[in-house]
Length: 158
Length: 475
Image (cartoon, rainbow over all chains, first blue to last red; front, side, top):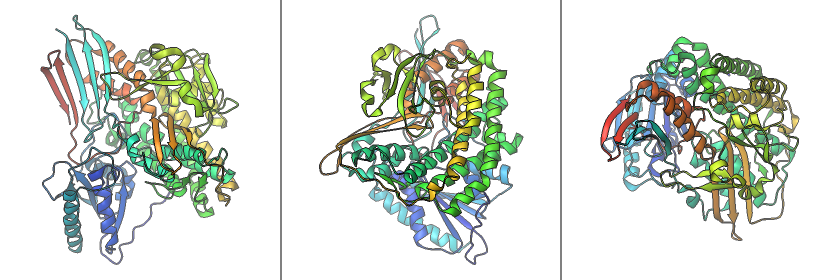
């Protein structure tokens, strides 16, 4: 299938924000919650994607953008969030096909589609992961607010 | 001194697998245990929720096969609302969703996880033996894997409403049909998808036949096999009755209405594992364990009702003279036969005008208890619920396919360890082979939680006193 051509909304560059994690596992839902919050801002040139995990077909997706931001919960980032440029990395083969890391995805996009978007990780610190429940902890919610405010401003500089 | 060797991939916040290989006094492998830390709170989590929420809610359980849980729960809730038969458009939309799920899952597993082992060999450098390595050396295959996975995901999106937390299947039917535009979009690419299915099948078949002597002794063992089959014995991944066969093909039970599955399948608890060990009740826990998934389904059915997959099934069984194939690594070949079958089914359904039908819901008389079964990509998935007069779920029991494959995976690891462990050191070769044996089952490792900051594979060697003798990290 031909890939959808993202609209830049009049902006010079196209930006993809992928928020991923399981909203049913407390603070693991920070990524999707972040994507939802950014989407509500209706920023021009910004496309939002949300999923449980990254997977190999996302290589085709990120290949269509100039800039990609991977937003996920973190168990150990310094709060409230950690924003870093991302370099590609080869994956380590594991037991399960359940997910691929953002760095590996970047490598896959380059190998398969000769695409080299600028990429960043936004690791939002979470605290509660080991129960089922569709809610964020109070501190995670606060960290989410800070991360949304940061990225909204950062996008304006792109 | 008794030694304990542990291979532990810490790939999630929780929900990881760990392999323990127990040595006897002579330094020989006495037992191997695969510990899957299954999160055990989900069944409690959904108690008290209204039944109509369940098909959406259960998708929180798993990030890789949410559609299977969505459909199994929806089938159970069909029973709760008294619907035993869906309208034709509703059943066909659900089937399309399910075959889309099967298609993307099997393609993902083969290209992401299995093809590096098959293309580079078990002893190849892990830095090369991965999906990027495949992309570099066999770019056409890697692109194929990505696009097949994407095709299946798009079918899920079109039938379930969205890729995650789909709402398409509801108690008694579905809430949308497939538009002409959506259908034509998928039809445009189906021939290419089928061509790629055939090529994938050929890779799996050729590999198996070329390495048949090695694979026959690679974590392989005779086992019982369980799956759903249609009333006429055909493979049916969406609906049917339960059949169990022995390693040589004799029927243990057949055409069992899955509403009474609990009379035929029991679960054993072992002190060293969070995971239960299901078994066929009439055979007991020692002899009643069984395999589910592609290998079991190909072995258990009488035929496949799509021509190319049926020809492939006959070809597959020809190497065992028509008897069940019990080679663990034959899962990959069987999985690719199912990939082709799913592709054929998708084409068949896309050409069925019922998909544009508008009679999407059926009604019946409310009941208090129901079971939904489906053949998920990894095997038979059981959902069992009781609902009270206030419409709230009071009991839920789920048996996921990885649970059914628990004993077989342990045996596969044990077999590999016995053959390849030398001394008390975890060599790269042993580690690779243990992983390869587990991957054949495509296990689900307590899905969906995965925050940044994960650790890579960790391997520890401990003695009986708990002292760490050796530790390796693969990153």
